[in-house]
Image 1 (cartoon, helix red, strand yellow):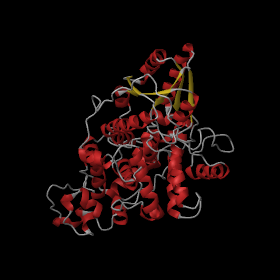
Image 2 (image 1 turned 90 degrees about the horizontal axis):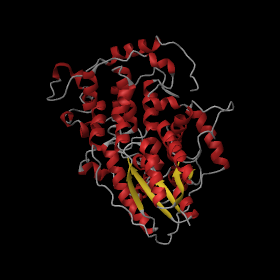
Image 3 (image 1 turned 90 degrees about the vertical axis):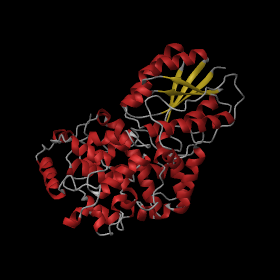
Image 4 (image 1 turned 135 degrees about the vertical axis):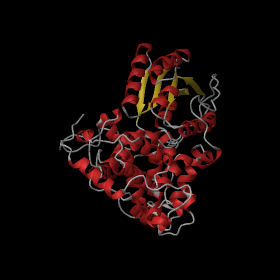
Length: 480
């Protein structure tokens, strides 16, 4: 009997893994993971993220060993090398079918199409499974047959589908008979990607057990209050599961079912915290569908074409100050320093710093999007691009250009006592909870050692952004 090969990508788990279960049901199975440093650099993947993948691979290898599935590792420096590498592997191990879980985005789609073409002359089938989404892109459409452009309408359509058919968890496969194929040793690091600090690693333990424990604790202890607490960065009110979702160490289906268990089976009524969290899972789904329906967002293009004409500033000094957390706006600096130290940023603050970047500094959102990807352990093209374009008012369902967050007001509202700022901007720790949000308002009393004055006037820069957007032509969103 020919072997089945599961090509692992962003699905580093054994439980609820569609392609793994399908492969093992079809015959004796082996697994492969491709190390692709050139592609990862091209996609701006963060060193913390690459390290997280490798640590999860090591945990996954042990789980697969219990199923007698050997894990092979091959170098395909760039995804254009994947067809040749996988074809050679299929020839050497008499593989009849390659199984994958679908991935989205232009490069991912082209890679998979190229692999399928390379395998066809060998008589090797290429099978794709739905896994990282509840609904396959193209199955949730408007009445006119188009992809949704507004999240609230997309969510309602998803609710209707969930009512009729709830995505089921995939049963874990049983162990197969041992194969006469040895697994490969896993790399501990990849050239060009620095190893993160032990402190950062400790924040994000690897493996399915760690992810499941984090999900269970959130569902039991914090999900009910998620809607009330999720916007306060000093409170541990979010799940912090995004790195595990991005790497596929846990699945959206597992998250959905955990929320349903905590909410008596309801997903659009009942406990507001559970409903709010499920809606966040649907936001993630929405942005993946956008990648497929509007592929220009994978090409560094604005979803709203008219916003390509925004006269973004060329201000390297402002860019560097923002990157380093030295803008003189405490909540912005605290958020950026959290990102640099932990590989993660609280979602409310992602919006605050992105809107400050694009509106107050009037810097091109693509520069901020790229910097985030280069540092986020949970870096995900769809979510990161969607969030940045929302804040920049260039994207689908975007914030209206005239709705501009005031970072000081946001700080006063969501970090009222300044606890988060004190944690990440310790030079301000001695200020009271009134002054800590805007030390520059202290006037001549400012004089805080090592902390800069604001690099921009918030009121004047707001007006500058309003004028920049007001002068844009009004164009319909093209379906390209």
